[in-house]
Image (tube, rainbow, N blue to C red; front, side):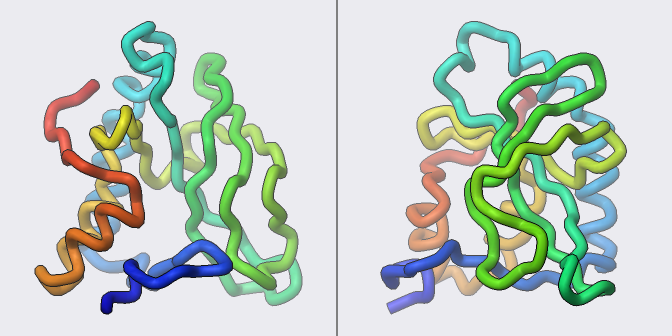
Amino acid sequence: MSEFDKTHDEPLFMAMNDEGESIVSSVKQARATLGHFATAFSKPQFRKAYFLVKTRFEDQDEPGEFVHIWLLVNDVLGDLLFCSTFEVPEGFGGLEEGQSYVLAEDRIEDWMINEDGRLFGGLSIRLQREALPETDREDFDRHAGISEYVDEMP
């Protein structure tokens, strides 16, 4: 049984080297294509989709400790994204589920749109999946609610 197939009382978070070349490249690509994300937010065809962005937070109880989490995007106004937390790591100082944040584009590390299991963007999710053994990828997809990885922009 893979880690993704087990029942969890809290969200499943995966550690990744946030200074690796592939992560740095994915952040640059996500920022370069953020306009597609913002445009799709207002398209009627994506009305029922989930829009998420990934950003970095510092632990308020342990300065120098960071976590990169996905936030649900509630609104987009110019280059500002109005977001809220929906999953937070247990015991991470200063973060609670349901908190609201306003993020400028330069705080965004990744973006994704999940339209009924069809994933647009999500470059870091794709990297996490690639790092897994082939045998765990189907469970990862099920856990993440992804049935298809779409390569074109929304």
